[in-house]
Image (tube, rainbow, N blue to C red):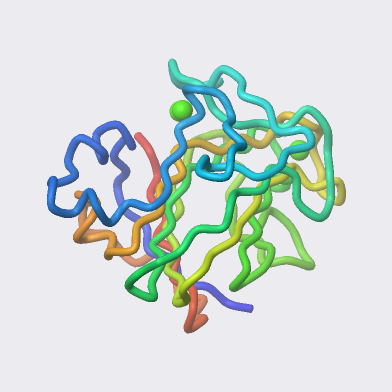
Amino acid sequence: MKFKFLCTIAISFSLAISCLPNVAHAGIIFYEDFENGLSFATEDNWSSNSYGRIVSDPLQGDNALSFSHLRGGGDLWANSISSTTGKFYVTFNYLGTCNTSNCGGFFWNIFTLWVGTTAPYPDVLVDDGTWTTYMVEFTGSSLQFAFEDWSGSGGVAGDAYFDNILISDTSFDESISVPEPATLGLFGIALLAIRRLRQI
Ligand SMILES: [Ca+2]
Ligand SMILES: [Ca+2]
Ligand SMILES: [Ca+2]
């Protein structure tokens, strides 16, 4: 399985949100910054959780998602969301602090299944001790997704962090003010194009 990455200078998500024009705001169908607890009602973001917990962001002043135990098969599951445009534009931030290349943060979605930090799954998420923003485009009408700190990875529980999950049914360019990315690498799968933005 292959992926297309584009890398650019990052902007903080708080800045990204503040840049959203009003007309495009309607395109946002999911947002989670982990500042207000995890909500599991039908109309809320999440459907189930095993070991996901909200912790202090080790690099910034806000909160982030981490996991108190390792797990396989999914840990924090989102409620299914729908797109009226047939597209999902997904962005999230990931940080691995294990000082190896395999802290175990994994993202599952109904379209490409698992991506994370080690084989046999696509080794997409970079564990370099800094926050990195990933952007991925899916085609479909319904999206399910989950996060976990994978039990088959290296590192320990709690060294993989996620934050600022933003999903829109309009394009990144329309919904978020993002600097023009420079190409990092081409991994080419039709359904999936991830733009990687490094936060500075
Ligand atoms: Ca946060
Ligand atoms: Ca943060
Ligand atoms: Ca881990």
